[in-house]
Amino acid sequence: MKTVLVTGANGLLGQHLINILLKESYTVIGCSKGPCRLPFVSNTNFIYYDCDITDEIAVYNIFEKEQPAIVVHAAAMTQVDDCELQQEKAEAINVKGTATVLLNAEAHSSHFIYISTDFVFDGEKGNYAEDDHLNPISWYGFTKVQAESITELSEISWTIIRTCLVYGNTLSGTRSNIVTWVKQNLEAQQSIKVVTDQVRTPTYVADLAKGIVLIIEKNATGVFHVSGKDVLTPFQMAEAVASYFKLDRNLLQPVDASTFTQPGKRPLKTGFNINKAVTQLGYQPLSFEEGIAKMFEAN
Ligand SMILES: NC(=O)c1ccc[n+]([C@@H]2O[C@H](COP(=O)([O-])OP(=O)(O)OC[C@H]3O[C@@H](n4cnc5c(N)ncnc54)[C@H](OP(=O)(O)O)[C@@H]3O)[C@@H](O)[C@H]2O)c1
Image 1 (cartoon, protein in one colour):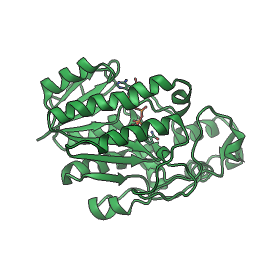
Image 2: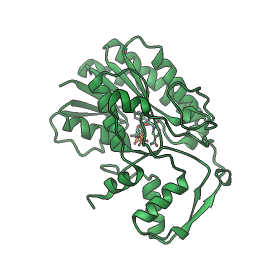
Image 3: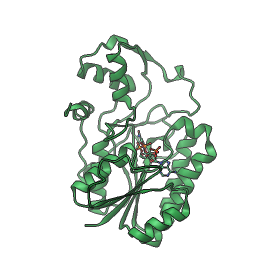
């Protein structure tokens, strides 16, 4: 089986992607900043490198040693407000870091798969298709557009996968997402303010991982939107969580996005048209309710 290098291995997506790749018998090289937080250390098809992608020599050495056929570049500075407040750092990781990984993928003729975001759009239109006009309104979104641009200029085979509001459990460690945030607050009888005027197509993390595997298997290149299929506001998502766990929905306070003053602007209406992924890849995501059920089915 082919060797796949996954950057951002410790992250929400990285953990689930590596899980499914190992189940499909790929050899996986995981690379992330800091010690390994993945529960696969005993798997002989898995090797982990503690590697900061801004360290050019460290990245070069991994490629020289492992010669990956496929690279899924998921490592990024992902917190929108941190990116706004630390713009140089965000650029170093999200743009220059991507360039470093891509240059090495080029040297080894690997298939380069870049994970991007709905935040490349301005949120005026919603239901975005792959060829819609990019117009980021945050520094995070801007760095992701820059990284997409350098990917598109490459002469090796490349794929850009844009995804939207990813939720799911981390396999180890914790990372809050819309489902866990609502559940934990309502269980503690805490009232929370939830936005009614943003729109997203929330994505169950294992669906995204499966979409990436479909792209690897089909050798699909170009840009793909890979997200959930339900078009929902955060308030509707919170209502679905309350209803699923039979929690008190009166604790949900509807508010406009303008209620929050955050350093990084969020696009109002995103969400994806996923027809291309459905027809060309056979991608079939869960509904939001099915995703919530999957998250908690083992508990
Ligand atoms: N989550 C979403 O809702 C969402 C939506 C759209 C697009 N995306 C994109 O999907 C990709 C994966 O996101 P995610 O949800 O898995 O985010 P995540 O949980 O924050 O994972 C990102 C990973 O990258 C690692 N990383 C950060 N800087 C690094 C560096 N300099 N060198 C090496 N590794 C570094 C992080 O390390 P630490 O764990 O140590 O911080 C983390 O493990 C990202 O490219 C993101 O932009 C995510």
